[in-house]
Length: 411
Picture 1: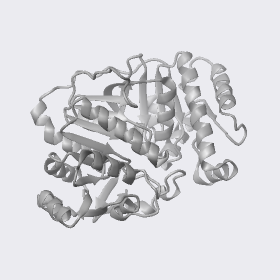
Picture 2 (picture 1 turned 90 degrees about the vertical axis):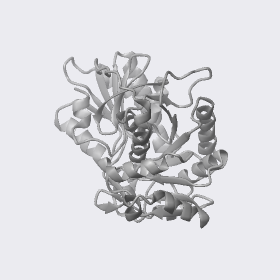
Picture 3 (picture 1 turned 60 degrees about the vertical axis):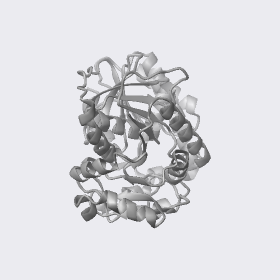
Picture 4 (picture 1 turned 135 degrees about the horizontal axis):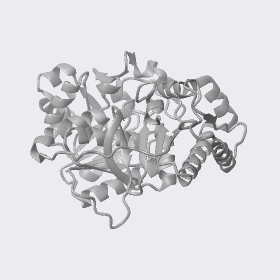
């Protein structure tokens, strides 16, 4: 089977649904499964970690624990390390340190990867990552509050974090079916990490066929789909009809990505009740959560699913970070939004919709959700997840979905 380790929760759901689309029975766990848990019949297991922005030693340790669990439960053929399609990381990591540790533990001499995910507007050409029509370093990701991306050349980014060299398989080589040959050449040159160009889904399908035999592969959901397609013919499993989400809904948004800001504005313009968590007005997470839940309790019946958010445009976000510090402000808001989520569920909310990887991780952790069944997608790469406890979760990465996703998903 394929075992996947994701560095955040929304990326994990994106990869899980990419695997499911290709016919693989996929199990998703939020965090390392508790001792004694045995997954049901499956073709792929995805373990969602929160390692993208933590200290790199902790990220490595958690990732290695996930690897040991996967290998103990049948992922002997292939492991897939999942990172964001915008290669979100700091100058010190954590993509490079985690890959170094996984590759060493698996004795993998070469690791192929690509963050390309064309359906989300992420493409790789000559080793450069594009976000839509812009280079990564010239896109909105330059202003990301935790992982600002100011370089676009992937081998250089990874070599700055890793002890090993990185190279590229170019698009003509991919389309000529020369991925395997190019990998062999680069391995002889002492290269351990290879970024594979891809502009279209067909490129990822071609790459997936040639990479299906590698023990360790990495990237975003696009390449995971290519690997799954290469294996799907051997499984022959049909997915059972997915349940439909129902019951009271609430939206919790913490991402400051441009698309999330659009989605938040769409909800407010539609007249949905909205409450902003403001750490400058109240720097205590408990107090922020109590006040937000008190506001929720005053909403009249029929007012529509509410929005509780901390998302801010770049200029206002900088003022918050200048006053409180980036790490402290993020910690306050993540703690508060997790406690809000728990309070909403205690009040009868059964559909929880989140925007942002760190926000989603905070909510899932606060709710104690172990994982769940991958259901239908509300947008590409954004599936409903049905937990054993009866909750329906929609965990949306910051840039995913159309402008009305939060509005329509919460109707």
